[in-house]
Structure formats: structure tokens, C-alpha cells
Length: 209
Image (cartoon, rainbow, N blue to C red; front, side):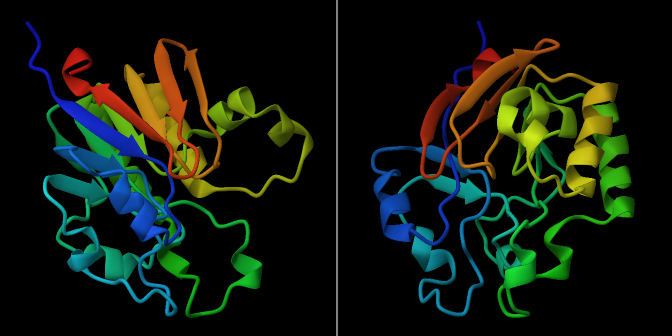
């Protein structure tokens, strides 16, 4: 019998921390998939106190999180973290970066090519059953979102890197946010789940790992 481990996954928060905390009531464990909104100068709720509610509630970073602030927080899941069959990688390309300032956009919002490649090797060795990321592989965007194929495309080394990951190994489940849409589709044996803003999904990871 697989060991049951119910985890609530939560979509982009974008600084709506009061609404986010309401989603954690009576939930023993959760993972937020990036764009928590930490590190913005007008965000008065900084630090672990923002998330100080009963249970284990963690997050990966998105492109709307200051990497240095996120990494300083005790409930941050670092890029490349591997645990119990699950691998976590944050970061993504901001399509709105041209309109943000040096205080609200960070050059290291994405991992470098070297960092992505180093994690690719770990990914191949580990062969995770579940991937939790902020963005997804490049080909998956086109498969999930029809309008992407006809709209503006901005090259993303994160998505291209994840494409290499996916070609090497297909996990059972891949959870992400970033696109602010609620979509689920199985492709080449992997179930991809995109969470909309503040969307929640309770998953028994024991069924996958």
C-alpha cells in the first residue's frame, strides 16, 4: 500500500497574502507554485510571519518574487530540491519585464543556462515521479494553450530547459502555475496541471511516488 501524503498545491498569489492564508486553514501541508509576490517594495507583509499558520506551508519562487528575499525565507523550497520522488524548480521569464523597474524586476528571475543544465543532470539521475515548477516545457505551452500558437512568443530559457528535461524523462505528474489558467492534460504519459491564480488542488502524492 502506498503511503498517503495529501498536499494542497496553490496557484500564483501575487501578494494576496490574506486570501492565500485563508486557503491554508485546516491544511497540514501545502506548496505554492511561485509568484507569491515576496520582495516588492509596496508589500508590507514580508518574512515568515506572513505564512505563520499551523502546518507545513512552503513555496517555490516565480518571476514575481525577489530571488534574494525568497531564498532568505525559511519556508522557501530551493531550486533543484528533491524529496520523496518530487523535484522542485522555480523561476520563469516575465513578459512584463519591460514595464517593471529595478526594484520590481530581477535579472536572476530565471536560472542561468549553466544552472538549468546542472539541474538537468540531477533530474535525469533522480527521475522524479512528480515535477513542481513555476513554468512548464515549451512544447506543453502550445499543447495546453491554443492562443499561444497564434500570439506573441517570448523565448524562455526556462521553458526550453524544461523541454530538455521532459525529453530525457517523463514524470507521472507535472504541476505548475505562471499562466493563470486552470488546465489539465496528459501528454506522453505525464499529466500536466496548470493552476490558475489562487486555485487550490489537493493531491495525494503517495499515489504517484
